[in-house]
Amino acid sequence: MPLVRVELFERRLTPELESKLIDRLTDALLEALDAPELKEHTWVIVEGHDAHRWGRNGKPWDEA
Image (cartoon, rainbow, N blue to C red; front, side, top):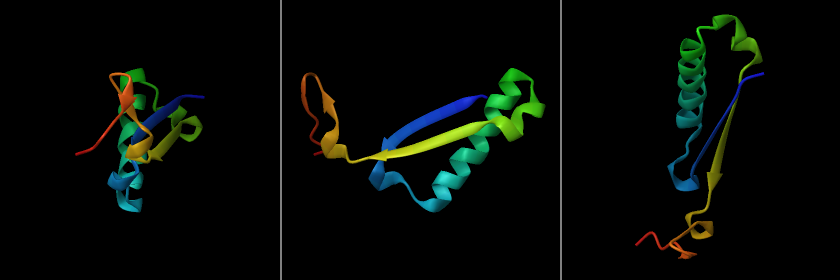
């Protein structure tokens, strides 16, 4: 069961982008594995996160 997980800022995600990511990440993985037969067993999880919950350099990250 191949699993691809991608995490992005919530503000970037739209239903169209989520669909495109799922389609293209599935295809890219199966091509790299040379295993097209795994398509029906491949999962892609797209997660959105509020930028205010991210941190960098030991401190909360400020988008500005």
